Length: 426
Image 1 (cartoon, rainbow, N blue to C red):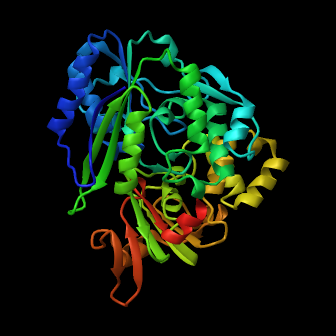
Image 2 (cartoon, rainbow, N blue to C red):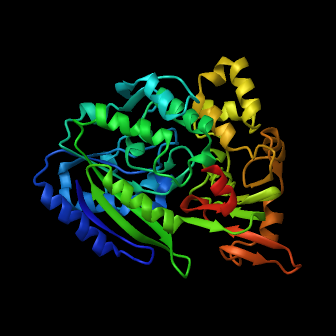
Image 3 (cartoon, rainbow, N blue to C red):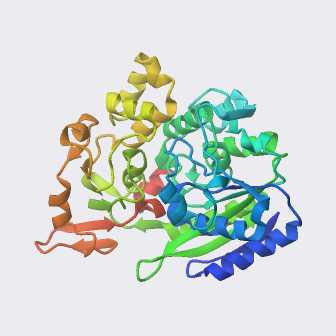
């Protein structure tokens, strides 16, 4: 059921309006005694899910018994991050998702289903894994809160992805990521109906019907002055709220270009991007816009590691971003990579497949480390002097010497594509 919907390309939903919308829906649901909130972690700070989680806490008080940030494989949130994203919610309510050990399997999507939806690209069953708190916590309401935005693994982020990946386990995360990579992210990004989404939908329909989940979905856009604004809010217990949000996100977050871009400069906010695992959104979200033999420069002052999980970090350092054929060969020859399919998928995602160059300018990694994973390297301070985020505007900029670049201040909130390449990927 769709309980609330509001949104358009020009809409700006104020915090007071968002609070009224959410509390109105919660009123309609009736009394609840044990409520679990499942917002994103700090890597989705701009989703405004933190604000909505705080509204839920204000509404339920001590009946909001648990807050489980949907970490997936990301690092746990720090106390400072909790205070910034969820001001006023006691730290004692937060639970840390243990994606390797703290999960249960609700059921398996059969291999024949996965094979069919992927067009035969992969042939394995997929386990619907969730944090044990969802089955053992005794909750009579679960608020799955987050932003719908183009995504490299599933096509459009959120809805059931927040549950089965955000609170998922190693096999579920690994196999879903590899399914997306093997099928081809350029065939999926910006689309609500993809092989990975169909697998998640199957899991929802067959294994999660007893979970009392209410989805609270946001769509975030950038205003004329550059500030991020809440363009859409959709609340429901089925797929319709996701579909409405995805349709708006495609209009708000997807920039279609008439010509491919020769040089793209992306800035990674140091408070949000501390690893290439996250920072490679600069690659995922721009790859369809960059011309053959073009150049991507990533200004990454906060990047200090490759993977947020120590084992994944080690695998990235060992194998590097080497392109699909090399990753497939490495998986065939090395069981450690074959058994960590999400890491293998990430290595595929983070390569341009030799089509354009990628130059990382990190704040805390050495030139040797960057070149060791097959990126080009440039000193951060030198590149910040030339491409100053304080003076650049999103979109086309012409430098003093006549060089033309396309600047992106936050790759997490958008998707960019050359029209012809997007049409060819359909």
